Image 1 (cartoon, helix red, strand yellow):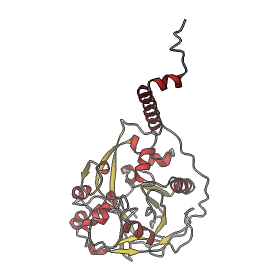
Image 2 (cartoon, rainbow, N blue to C red; image 1 turned 30 degrees about the vertical axis):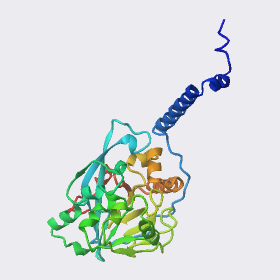
Image 3 (spheres, one colour; image 1 turned 180 degrees about the vertical axis):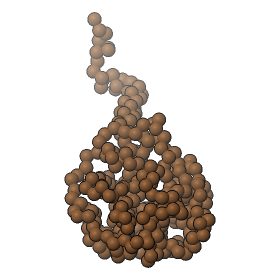
Image 4 (cartoon, rainbow, N blue to C red; image 1 turned 60 degrees about the horizontal axis):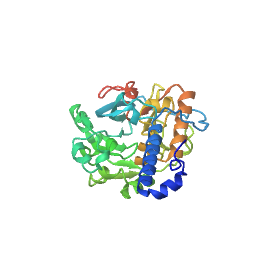
Amino acid sequence: MANSKDARPLLQRMRHNPIRSFLALAAILVLAAAACLAWSFAPARLELPRVEVGALPAASPPPGMSISALPTGTYETPAALAFRGGSWSDTRAFAATGILVRHPKGDLLIDTGFGKNVDRQLALLPSYQRSTHHLGVPIARQLTAARMPLHDIMGIIPTHTHWDHISGMDDLHGIPLMVTDAGHRFIASRAKGTEVLNGLGDVQYQQYAYNGGSYLGFPQSHDVYGDGAVVIVPAPGHTPDSIVVFVTLPSGKRYAFLGDLVWQTDGLRIPAEKPWLLRRLIGENYDETRIDLARIRAAIARYPQLTAVPAHDGRAFRSIALYPAKTR
């Protein structure tokens, strides 16, 4: 027969031994939190809303237009931290690559990757944001080695202003950073993630406005040259200043440079969101990210000439010639 003491209700026993009861409850809560955190890394297909992207926008890129990729280094991250369902044993080399757009009306850079002072810049960030990285050749040095005058670049378009996208600006003084008013206000607020940019000193800003209509499901757009060759749309899910840059080449090939909407192509293909913990640390807008991801997936499904390029997936850049070679 069971001991009557053991049969006492749980709450009664807890009152008689509060310390043990507190420790037991704490252990239960810790285990529950650990289980929830582990679950947030488990494979799960992200449900996306249905969207209409409309007709393929017209574009008339000039014959002399081209793009080139300028890789500046990598940092290693487990796939499990890149997209939900990724393996901890699958190490991904996160790319830090800029894109040079050559256009008769003036050349542009989309992102700048790592600059020569990236180690010093990382010291400005909280310790948990500092990534072990492999510095390659900064963009300024690549351009100079090929005897391209840096002043030929009329502007830098950051897909957003996190350190691994604007570090190289430190080597490109005098070239304007192209941002919207909302993006400029985000930078000026000194919000989390803007530490490196705000530490660069005298940055010249050139503001542009979303004065164009909808573009492949995105409600607003800005046509940089006025010929449809480079079109910027707002995508403020990852950060308030995040954008997607659409580029159309003379051959008819089109690219969508996604920034950090997803970190790896897997996130777009499955689709899969970034792990919950990473999204929380960054402060992502969950609803905005989902709708923008839905727009890009719908666009590439409908228009096979469009290639989506997540900023940190080196494989996605393979169809773009390495500088000084050109893709037209």
